Each structure stands twice: as structure tokens, then as C-alpha cells.
Image 1 (cartoon, rainbow, N blue to C red):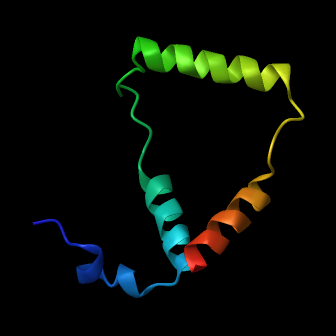
Image 2 (tube, rainbow, N blue to C red; image 1 turned 90 degrees about the vertical axis):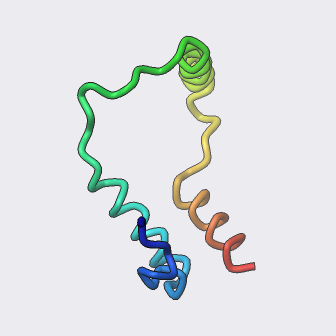
Length: 76
């Protein structure tokens, strides 16, 4: 049986610690050279987003602002 967040004590971590743990777990997953390729609708969406990004390169939100807003919402 897969351990739960309660079994591992993750539920007792503060939000910042949980986010750091998620990032560490994500970074520990090796890239899979034989992973699934995006579906055709996913590929079109990625292309659409890339085109939108290239068309408006200054229309971005800095990562620090995104993180601060996410942490503020998590604390509520």
C-alpha cells in the first residue's frame, strides 16, 4: 500500500516546506526518453501558447509574484 501524506508526516509541514518537498520530489524523477508524446490537441495548445508568448514577450508575471500569491492563498 502506498503511504499517505499523514503516514509520512507531510500534513504537519508548513506550506513552504510542502512546496519545497514537491519540488524536490519532482526534480528526483529522471527524464524519460521513451515517455508519452503529447496528443495532437495538446501539441496544438502548446504551439498556440508559444505563439502567444512570442507575440507578447512582455506580457508575463514574474515567478516571484506567482509564488507569493500562491503562498498567500494557501495561508488563508
